[in-house]
Length: 353
Image 1: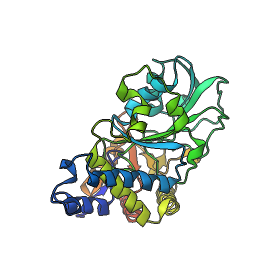
Image 2 (image 1 turned 90 degrees about the horizontal axis):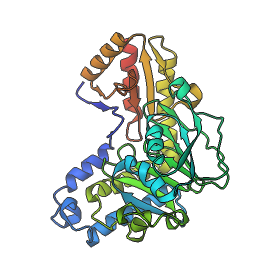
Image 3 (image 1 turned 135 degrees about the horizontal axis):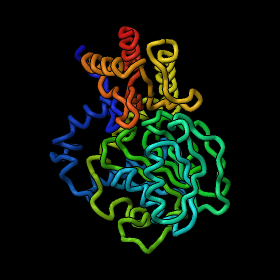
Image 4 (image 1 turned 120 degrees about the horizontal axis):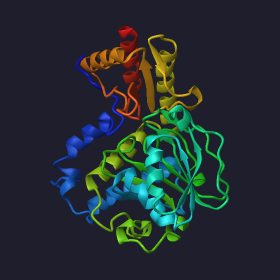
């Protein structure tokens, strides 16, 4: 097999059409005989790129006018601290603990106020989404991780938080399915799963939340700085934003969010059916909470898993080793992974058995 299939959890697969266009334009963007990487972020050419990316994102998931779209840096990991810095103000926050990424967010929030663990699935090693929540009456916000890449679990229905702002880390499933942005006060996502390359963090945030944020912070750590300056208070990650703009064009060409959700459901169904109907494999997440982005599974022994991963890699299926903290296997099937790619993996799994 000459073709390689990329199942890495992140940085992850990008659409081949996007990669080809970036290659074609690398040395001569838009006929200016310069690379997008070497022109001013204040130039007309880059202004069209960043404005185009924002407008496509707004259209693609229906971002309301009273929300700002910002392209920041530092990954979701910076947001873990930046959110409570701006919004907690020594008050109370509710966090729902569904795995490794939620735990990292909780750790940072504890530095800036009281954290109430409103729900957790730690009792079963984060293989499900908790449905029984103990939400505070006076919380500044509720935080959840919409999809946990390590445990392979995903929120299928949002909790009812009433008037309390809901904040979601959507790093690994944004743009994979339809969402109602107005149900969230803030959405943030590292780019390197479904948006673009690593180095850019997308933040979609309600304007009143931004304006009510703390002013006793350094300039770069205030959301209002980036809102007011259109993500260009300092030099933004220009090449990454350029790729995001291309990915948004690609998503539009594929039929938009409804078509992408339908394709993702189809891919996940094929792979999970193969796991469930084959005694060689078994899934690790509770069926009702299975992720459609990160499919986690195991074989009957670690020795067999090691052989499976070795032979898969030799056959062109890359990145199937589970996270080092849990072991096992994981196939990340983000937007850019085609149905044919998943079908090829399924054929390999059947042949391996």
